[in-house]
Image 1 (cartoon, helix red, strand yellow):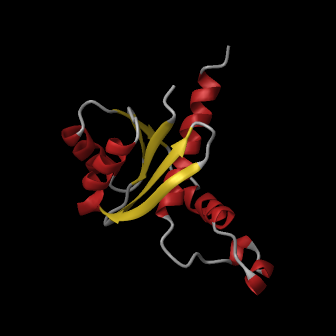
Image 2 (image 1 turned 120 degrees about the vertical axis):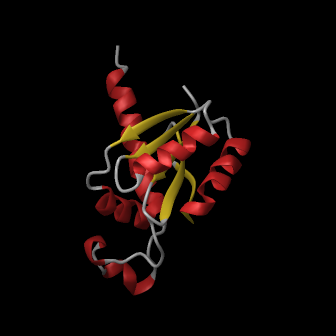
Length: 139
């Protein structure tokens, strides 16, 4: 099993990218315009031994998958459902970026992240991939 997986939350104009390790930790991530996506993917592939990419099944996923296949035909691509990723992404965003001061008093459901958090939607997609992998490979 690879140590890392690169996960992408596709969108019409921007994508979330998350690098996640096999212990389900968010290692790195960012939100990029679609035009810059392949450059960023290439950067992650150059730094980490990645053989698989996970892509969410939502908006614009077919186009993103086609571009990845064209640019990186050696990669294995898995498509994972995106149902409820936005709500879960918000929770993980604040888990990794906890509020400080009086903002801690606001319930997570009412907090609004200060930046786009599509990278954490990609993180949710990666967690689903690992969960499915573990579930399907139990002895």
